[in-house]
Length: 198
Image (cartoon, rainbow, N blue to C red; front, side):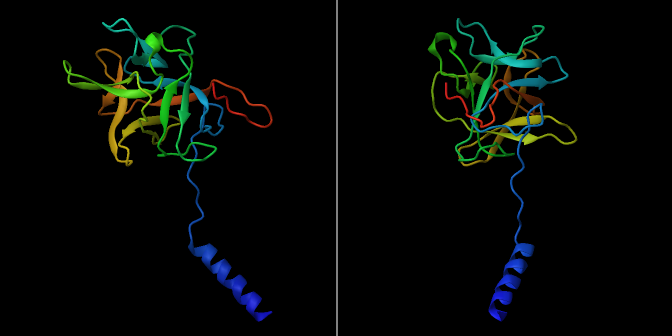
């Protein structure tokens, strides 16, 4: 009996010392956790002009593969699938993720978000880049706000840059400051959630 009480005491002591916190989950606009593999409309809250849902934009090239904010009234943008290599049901802060548009892309491009360096402007843009290579991002919480920021990270998890819109052309890229965004469901679950893989 005494050994059982001793074991219970040790267990309680360890539980009081060891941290029991779990990673904080990201929430969508309904206050629900963001599903790993779920599809969401991402909306920019940027007050400097690039405000609206995320979509694609044509530039001088034939194919639209740059990313911008859609200013068309009542537009929802293009849904984005958020995937993490971690085998978790929900996405947590600072967890590596890949971002990819859903649906058929123009010119048979891959929908996966990547980075494209423009040698003329000496900028790096976030684009759909025609490959299926894993491009890690993380999503971080903005201070004193119900919005989030997206950052580019290296494969080993080091932060490379914030992701935001360039003010002169409204295109998404690697910027000094991160653009505030929210995530709205582009899918609906039954009682037992089943994620679409299409």
